[in-house]
Image 1 (spheres, helix red, strand yellow):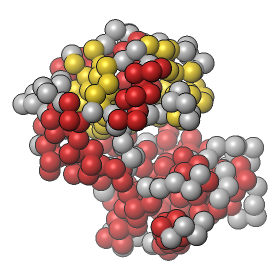
Image 2: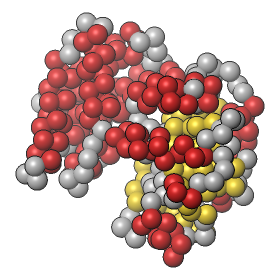
Image 3: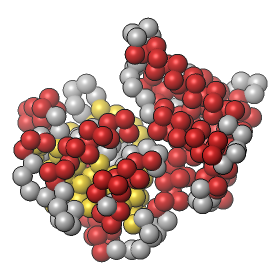
Image 4: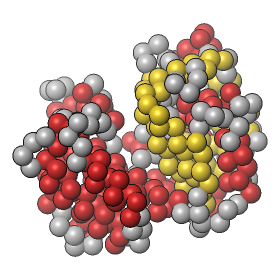
Length: 310
């Protein structure tokens, strides 16, 4: 099974790197600067589950010459249009795309571009970052990847990918018949956590220790759950209970990556996460007031960033 990973960053580099470590046939599709770094230093992962360093096959889009079996898509949502162009040369009649992007809107875009039968659903749960020297630093015990067919069937390709990941002790992989519901659960989690921590410029515990912080996060969470239910993907009770505890933890130092992106003055996925759910709230006639506030806050940041006024 020949696997192409778009990028070699914090998410793709980790999950594709662990497949490589387990003996998989993995190639990284990267830009020239990252290709040069990989040629000089190899792929490097630092993790409590074992460090890994090895030479890798790295190519640019212009060097794609034949199709791959699996394309692992791990770009940011705002880079998806250019990513779709980049992987065109890797797509054959039997190529499968596994996207690990935030949100769900990308599924419709991928279906329209390549055909629904070639697109899996996927969810990654990991905290990692790419250091300035190109090292992938794994930050905690999250190392989970879940994937499956959009129609819920347990296909041969899904089981084969699960078997490949099972060779690595540094990844916990799950083949799920409910991947679309799980993607919506992650969107609810992400929109609530990233929207609140980014808008408040504070982590979960800092917000929870304010007078109205827990109530505000809970209200935003409940609106996001309503949207998921209206879309036909009600979150599981276990998820609901765990997330309520998560946002009520006054000692938490957790913050979404969107806040870290803002703190480094980087681009954010505001439209793809909070903006998308705002559109859905309005379509389903669900109270959009918190979404409007959070989304406007994030858009204001984007406006200031665009004019170098941060």
